[in-house]
Length: 316
Image (cartoon, rainbow, N blue to C red; front, side):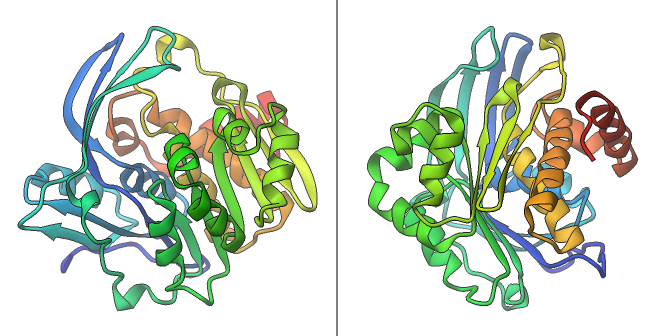
């Protein structure tokens, strides 16, 4: 929107994300948070902004709280010119409840709102975006969005079990067009029919991408690339430190893509390092509801935690 500004890192490549900005109500064993800022775009952009400038393309409705815009604008490296506010629409909303182990959750309600409408327009100023992240939404929408950037340098997509089930054909077409895909262990197994994480990712690479990142929650992540395989442990958080896991995967992707854009590299070594930054950045997200914890920290906090993670995981 006019008046929204961002910091400019001259060495970074333009990074763009599209997906959802929503209103979440979250119940966990720790408590309940009502109508907090959520959505894949919001978490991704906040996390990526610690590493590089990030552009947001998404839509919200007339009911989107102004305080949520203030939260996003608080991340000075987030460009919101591509965030549409639709006066005759309502915002995507989700209500979920986590079980005691904080890994399993149930969706209590979902209101699609603007997601039932046409995708948001892409500002002309974003046409030079080199790094594209397609956060979770229907693969047909992701594919159509991607076609606006024929000269992109790197395109990575997220997906979920629902699309594997009901939109597999469109998802398979998308996988032919992207350079990388991020998905969790159960989604990789669902997509390929293979339970072994590395083998499942190799099957995914046969569908088109150059690499796949298989997220395994508290067990870390696996990168399978045409040029090699790398593993990354999870940040060693104890259960009592996990307040709200919502958005952890999107924050992981934001940290990962933000790092790649900041160094302007996409080789397997850079991807491995990017996964480490994604892991550390996401470790803050889970410590509070919504974007609260990310809004409290500085880049120096992430750097300090990265040093601890390097010492524990021995990653460079």
